[in-house]
Image 1 (cartoon, rainbow, N blue to C red):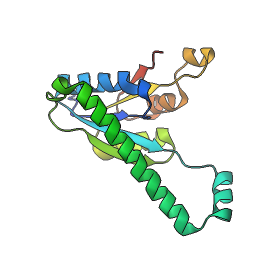
Image 2 (cartoon, rainbow, N blue to C red):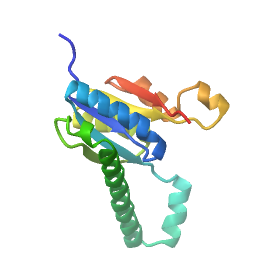
Image 3 (cartoon, rainbow, N blue to C red):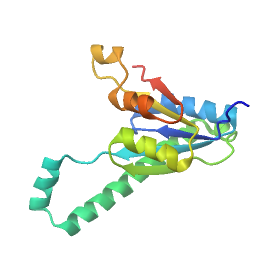
Length: 161
């Protein structure tokens, strides 16, 4: 029996150029009548930066700053999804469910894999970011790690400038 795609995890970095990958996720979700989970990873600060921050800012203030960062990021995710839904209103009606949002903290490749497991994803869709001509010849480091370590299939959509 062929494997069904019921849940698609779209790992999004919230950059405008990720619309190509979101369009691919939408097409796959409609074709398979699958749910879409839009997730974003908030990277941890380095140990050196954390030590500097802890030396100058109280624990309460740090906690408040983290909560504000989460709120702000969720708002950006909702705005991104809202704009996308508005631009593709007819297609969005074909989805079996409203897309869910997931915010994760940690090293992106690791939390993408963990979130895929958490939501029961059957497919991960993400974009590949390149920063140089040499970088354009190889897949991005986060995407590369996910492709090589994921337990579910991964579709990487290149960013076309």
